[in-house]
Length: 204
Image 1: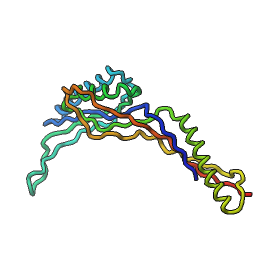
Image 2: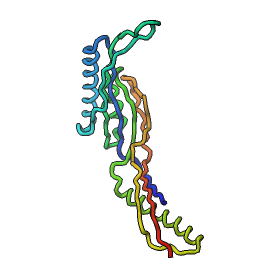
Image 3: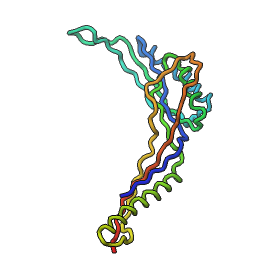
Image 4: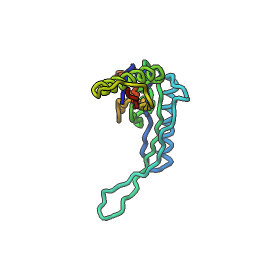
């Protein structure tokens, strides 16, 4: 078995941003959430995010209960409406601006749930990782063959497994004040592409 890993700077960012509103009635909560969510989405688009890169990730309406009274059934005191979108940022130099604008547009209703980074085009990186994995497997097999007093023949079977290039989580549960004057610092870091292979070799 061999493994090859190639690292490269992240070039794409993702984050989930939305609003959460609590009100006495469903209609009031839904209406306020709709207004705040609309402001957030308008901010994203005004900061260069294409419509195809904004996707609704969650929309829910849940009752809020009061459990304070002992030996009695909980009572509904209001309703919570949550509306969240997943955002893809293709230009990382604008990442802070996009986030700060969205949070400011949502005001105190804004919720920023996560920030992740990834690599958009991994084809060349996969080729490099694949080559490194094959070299790793051949080196191990060659050593074992030598220790066994035989030579290494041709590969009989080769199986490849690509480790998913999932966006790397960086931040969770963040929010910011609407009147913030300092840009949120963001460090994209590097991503990695990994290939695992299993080779069955003939011996001679």
